[in-house]
Amino acid sequence: MTGVIDYGVGNLFSLMSSLKAVGEKAVLSSDPSVLSGCDRIILPGVGAFRAAMDKLKEKNLDAFVKRYAATGKSVMGICLGMQLLFDRSYEFGVTEGLGLIRGEVLPLEDALRQKGLDYKVPHMGWNALNLVNGQNNDLKLKQGDFVYYVHSFYAPEGDYTVAYSDYGVPVTGVAAAKNVIGCQFHPEKSGKVGLDILKAFCAL
Image (cartoon, rainbow, N blue to C red; front, side):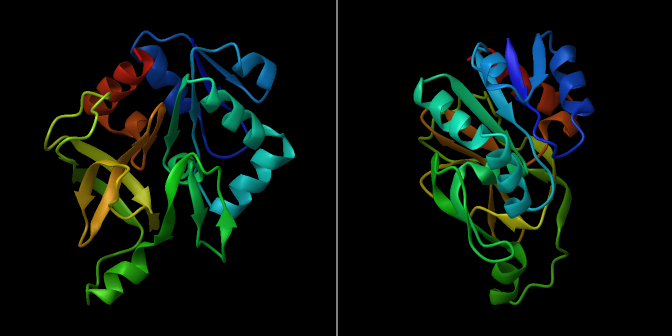
């Protein structure tokens, strides 16, 4: 069973529907006692990093996610949920994250302007994934898979990058550190590719 963390951030209907579509039994909960009994958990999220961290802390879910990850069970963060897995974000100042993936989340607009690029921010729409050679591919990603993004902050390419998309700068699409995985894009909005990614995660 897969647990989806409900902490008041985002519309979770699409994610729950997608998990059902791949044949996965899933529970939506904010109760650590329920979530701790799941085989794996998903941390979704849309909106601002600081507000999301505040909501996690209000429910003591930040500490729970860290404890859960320490058991070796699989954790996936989606969109803002992926960003929360990192050490910190520079959205509206500096906010500390969960620290499960070593790295920082930076303003995409600043990175584009430094290169003299006038790309639209947020990065919204379909983009191809480029696999990083030598990285573990637990999600069974394929080179060139198209996925759907909506975000204004990003994790630059780093040691944690499993796959990236080119949006003037390399945008980490999938990050991983041991049993912790993050998808900057929305698998639940990425058609068959996204369903295949969720199915592969649920098989871990």
